[in-house]
Image (cartoon, rainbow, N blue to C red; front, top):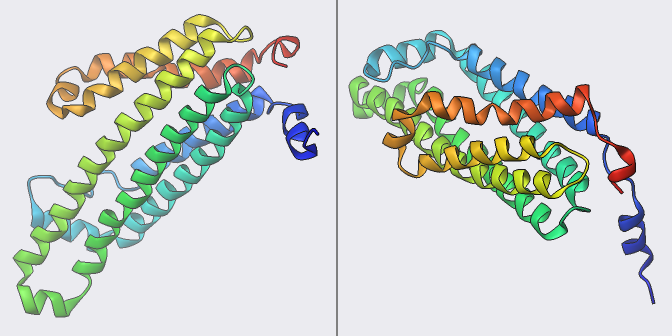
Length: 231
């Protein structure tokens, strides 16, 4: 006997490619905004200046955290849309791509705790009295430095997501294969964050390869897909 719920899922229409493009671009915009809000606050070589900046610009620091969290929530929604879009190409690979993407978002969201910690620690006068101002400032700088390392871990997970999604595009009949190869090139580049010094030394190449993730939503917005070939 056929399960009605299963039939409904299989028969449902895939998400609109332009909807996916809009959500993807919205993610980029929120990510850029989050970066701009906290730009210049962190001084990697100066714990005292970093602590001063975080306290002086506390509202901007927390606003940046809120926007970054929002961007992760948007990417989770995007992940669900992409799974629905590509599951007809290869349901197993589409599910694997979704898992990698959700894992990357989870790592970034958990990592936000390391960005919340400095504002909490620095604003607590009892901690400064107990451990001394310099120790508290050093702890705050250590926290945001660790966050950057955690963020790099998420790059590896998103690299796997790009590899899987790129392969899905190559397998599909409704998107240009060059978009898939470009996305996979970005995924290969993202894997270099397994050894951060390598990624840092070739960052111009990573930017060029990673631009595929911007090219795809632009294509979906401008060109869309041949709906007759999606089903």
